[in-house]
Length: 102
Image 1 (spheres, rainbow, N blue to C red):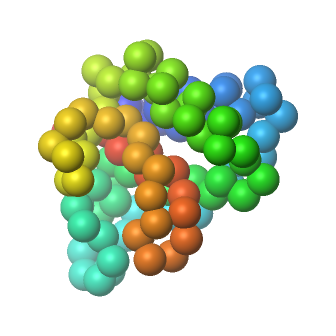
Image 2 (tube, rainbow, N blue to C red; image 1 turned 135 degrees about the vertical axis):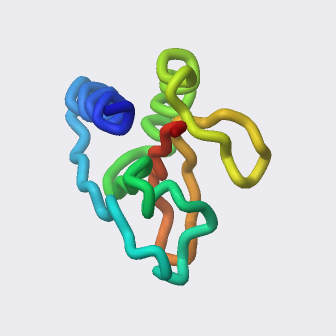
């Protein structure tokens, strides 16, 4: 349920700016060989393409998500802080990694 809330939050933000949203990954197999955490395997994460998004769009979304959605965010592997959205390149291109707690 929390992942749905976070996806809807991103969709609303993107709609307000006329941005396209493409979900590129949801659930993955346990042995996918590319995930640092198990958020995708447990249904708690989604990856979203940032194609045609500006750096400002990305930063604005992350700041707003940390203000409004931190209560459902998962702990980031990189810095151990709660982050509902992480912008990173996991080896398959830069994208938004949406993640929620258990």
